[in-house]
Length: 326
Ligand code: UT7
Image (cartoon, rainbow, N blue to C red; front, side, top):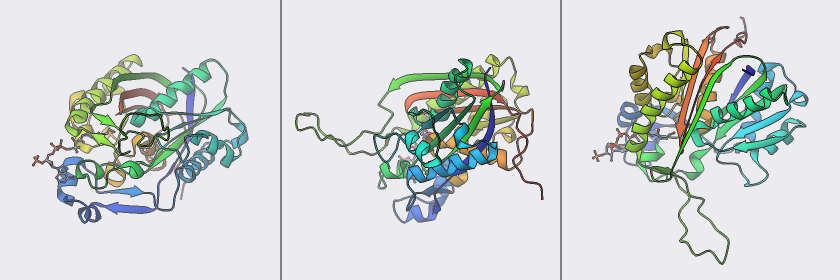
């Protein structure tokens, strides 16, 4: 197909919110959160804005790729939460890094990074671009109901970026959407129109956790299976799975369904919780920079989220290690 990943970079807020601190805010405890989700801590924004984090991730990825902002032909930001409705976060990234190219957002909730890869693929196939920057970042801490223990323990802020260049490393990609606002939804919350007649809802995340859980295990298992088959490969060919980091039990159940050894799944959910669209690229960046990924490795990525959306893909990793030699 059309592109190679040339570099990755992450950005997370400094503040670490532990399970113990959460236990002072709602009726929960470290044991419950760890056993049911695998999460030990997450990052939350205090001083940082979404723009600052996206720009930091973008600069890290550009440096890793050895690509200058002036070389970029397109910027795609996947997020649900810019500071402004307009200008888009993608335009703010373009301004702050000093690029001169089109920039727009995609919103596919937690599946956003893989949706953005698929959009970028089209630009490469049409030969409209040589370098594309994707930044996937969410800061759901500002729309979490911090009194709702069933959701506030699950999410964290942060994300990552990837720089794409011409190449042949996208082996398959598959997106799905099945509109459903009953199990996972975040309303806007405000409407300034004096003519609007609907009752306003509080802008907080509403989720039927166990419904999403069932959807997630099925989405992850069938999504990876299809992406691997579409790439003309079998599960045995997959060196690494970079799954959406929502809940370690979802990852374990999917590994079992797929018959892929759990050790091949890269997991960092214990440190960050669910960072929505930031989750898959954040894991990809940590895998890249920890030296886990070797040139030629086959990587399956899969995400699911509100919409309900899913995205899965298989890529070949053809980048030299980002780990600096001692
Ligand atoms: O990016 C996509 C976004 N979402 C997801 O991926 C979420 C998918 N769902 C899940 O990860 C899981 O369903 C949860 C982690 C949300 C919940 O785990 P669960 O095993 O499905 O628990 P549950 O909702 O069935 O709740 C079990 C019990 C309930 O008490 P009772 O009714 O059995 O007495 C809850 O009230 O656990 C209680 N509970 C808690 N207890 C302590 C719920 N949240 C907490 C909490 N601390 N934070």
